[in-house]
Length: 273
Image (cartoon, rainbow, N blue to C red; front, side, top):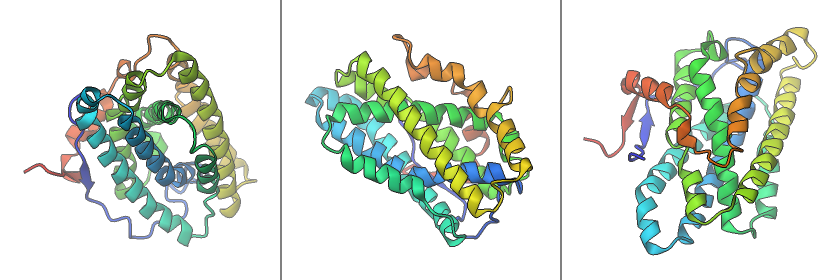
């Protein structure tokens, strides 16, 4: 893998945005808000997991992973910071971050487990987020009629998720992680992530007073279950992770590369003259 650059995005998330910021669509806004609410703690978990994993490698292996881990941590730390700013706006609008509290309790409960299991969970969740990221990059309707600042924010994050999709997976393999636990943990984190996302989206819609509106759920059905919807169109990609010869690099990164190449004015690569 090429060195992963850390980018500073040229947007201001201290500026308020509308409660239904995603094209004035209640479901699309609530769903992406739920994702964002999960990210700061989730990104920190990923960082902590790969740091612990690397410490368990032999010195020569550690050197091999050094640059990729550095870039991975830099990108994830930037995502964590900007989503925390985004979530601060949601908090000011009165939204309750249940998904973060649930994740924090699980992290504390499972802190004693073998580092390889945390890396396996990170690899599985990175696959899920990479599928979502690639879907967002290829589905303009998911951010239709959204202000350019927030479109840039979500598409930049998506491009970087695709870019570093292999790091935790390769680390798990280097740690000697076996297939049985890779697949068991993948199914577990899929179930927990979708459950938490459903609960938080529902809570967000309740706060928005749109939970019981027909238009809310027709929008949700389109977003998730249409032919090109998030869940329906990514089912094969989810299944692919369970193949014994799977590797994240098998999934195309072309859309990520295209977005980053076309939007260079939207960010500065840190450390680059």
